[in-house]
Amino acid sequence: MTKPAIAIALLSAAMAPVAIADGTIKIPKTQYTMEHCMNAALAVRQGEVQALEMELNNGVPVYEFTLKAADDSKWEITCNAMTGKVIAQEQKVQEQEGSTTEQKEAVFTQAARITEDEARVIALQAHPGEVDEVERKMSAANVPVYEFEIEMADGTEREVEVDAVTGLIIGVEDEIYAIGDD
Image (cartoon, rainbow, N blue to C red; front, side, top):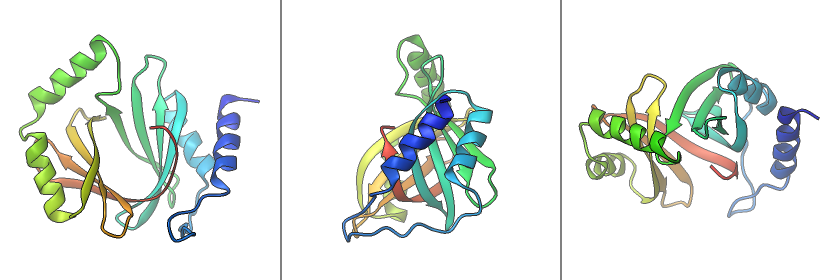
């Protein structure tokens, strides 16, 4: 069995009993399957799938795959589940080891014009809640981005991305489900 086939089988098996606090999740209708989107993600960035999230990105269902590349870098590849196309690639900054981490962190810090605390205020003013996690990422165009995972009052999770150069919110995603360790 190929690695993508194994990943699909494991993810599919893990997805069957998914539930949330009220006992159900509402999975939006899609035009393209998770398998199609995973293959699209692997076509743009080779690696091992470590996690999958289904999210609503401004109301549009997307699959977000966390991949570990051969050089140990971690990437988030986002595929629009309505078009079947990859719409974003972001490299995680802190999740790498050795000099690559230090180099990416230096690039991030040098390019950023706002601090993490300033970005946090921007994210929470627009989307009040409790920040559970913060990630620093570099987009495929080398733009530094802060991503805040915010627990909303209703218990749902929302990811808010703030451009570390402009301070603008550039992405808001509501998590439907997550599988794996990103």
